[in-house]
Image (tube, rainbow, N blue to C red; front, side, top):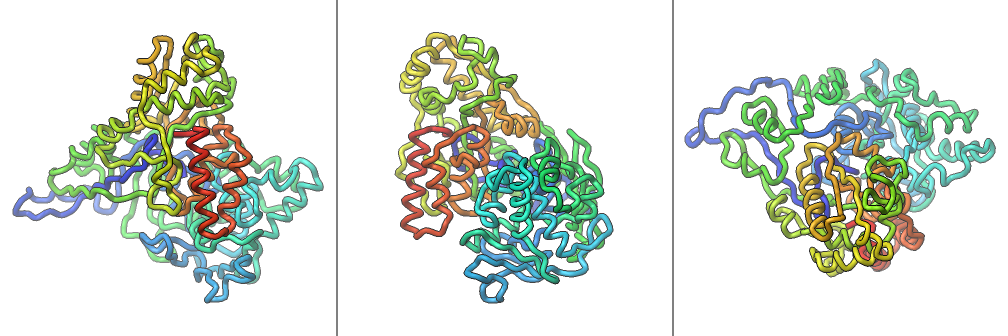
Length: 562
């Protein structure tokens, strides 16, 4: 899942968490009263891209969706391999008879009496609708590949057939319809191929598997559930420019959407009819506060209960009364600098669009010499030391340390301006060095680590040749995401927070042509696609090791991201 505040370019990190705790009164001043004891106030950067669970694929959106929707099952607190039933009455397993046919049939009995924010009750039909609607929508760069992979054996809707042709569209529609079925009080999922049950349950515990009140969704313009004219269905509801539930709450979670004031805050209010009982808090407010100094002041004054703290500023809170800083908490995430192989020719960030010293052509980064020159221009050691205060690791590929098949011996790129100059002189037959270039490198406003990474890269590259110019620009998080999806960014810095703890969830988005980042980059390597697809099909551990070690080696050799 792309993150607005998680780890930054080229590193895997350990995160800091700050929390207000009661300290001994003998050594600290008296603890001040809590200003709003029934309200949780969070001050962070950016804001959600959307509240539509089928569309959302970023941490800012997920933070809200997790609180206004429910899934069939959810993680048992901090355990990634244990689950608790939510809308489902039981967690499916072979032992309880809800996993059948060698794992190809998975059954969820649906709990009765769960009320929704719109005044209805969740039914098995709502569950079926939620998954079918998500697969129909399947927007570019979204999360629904994780539903398609086990259910239909593909990664995108359009792989199933020509959805503009009536005959093929009808077949595709039937595939979707048959994959999820209501049988009495149960919802049955039919898998297209063997798929690890643990991974399936982890995917079904995330925001894209949220259960929607169908009646509420239809009232707001979503797919009405008809299955009689699939060409029209796909034309209207597949990959829309804006999702129907962009600012709509059709959930049954512990909180309801009260108001979304764009650029300011999202306000949630307690849902008193929540099936597990009312939440202890009456309200939750997520404020968009991009400036660290403002967030810090809010936190110290008690005007915010939780704040996003950039790593280099954590020491400013250490020792403050009634604040305890918890360090070295690992997070399964990484990040990279990604190069776009085919930039949108209409991109406003490539100057003249030509290799004339005033811009770059759309295929600028398709030359591996350009990519290697950039890779050797980044000073990892300084970045980790100064920006991350040493709480980060420079890893050699997409797979984070701690996951199976991480290869610590894989060769990687290190800071070497001599090599960078060598590759710049080779790039595009010497024209890059001769003509120079100009483009804009964006970061999301408030993310000081990404800003620092971009500025460091700019400084190092511009030091090599006065004809090299990079303009670093900050934009809002939703703007950043949309520009990435449209291939308007020449290069982009972004982090990936694990959807599920398996190497597949890192190599697929980073390297598969239909993966989230690779698709945005227009990076395609058929051999890599084949390797990655084999890696999730339950081969032996030895086979998986060969596949993932090979993919990490190819990532270094091709350099689509670093």
